[in-house]
Length: 230
Image 1 (cartoon, rainbow, N blue to C red):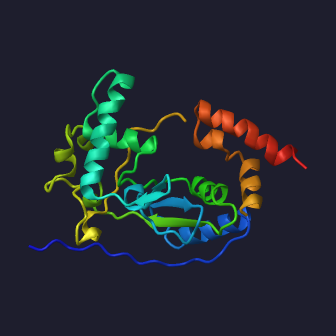
Image 2: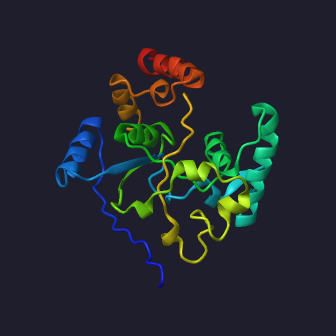
Image 3: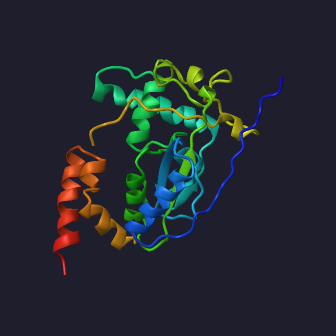
């Protein structure tokens, strides 16, 4: 039997200019279907496609590259090998995928959040001179759309993680079949200007989004600039 392709219906809800307007739109969206489960993603430039970092071009030293499937395997393997002295143990490939994503290695994971205000924060705090975008995605009822994070984290090598039988196999010609939701095991403790200020007034700051020492340090100076500058 041929696999059924995934399909998406996209609806643009329009522009917002304040936190109050965003919340009003959000409540109207949820009121249309109170049982709807939504996850959100905020991007500093609303024109950007929803691409995971492994699928984006990366520039450094005057050169640019878009990584291939083979590059992805090699990058994760090198990360695991070089992280060993820091961690004192070898990470399984599935576990390393979560850790590497947090620390900036290009991966196929695309971050979403159940908190709409967090998504709005990222849409406004990055790329201050562009219109940001907040995406809301309705989760499917089918459990086939989900990947068990414990099973994923237990996969020892890159072949098991990315191989043909894996649920994370390289998309190839039919990417819609391979879009899955996975709740990560690794969650470390760690308008635009107008909306950022409004969010700060409600306690949505870098310290809340990333409650580790990095988040505390950044929030200390950001809050002082936001509220105590001329």
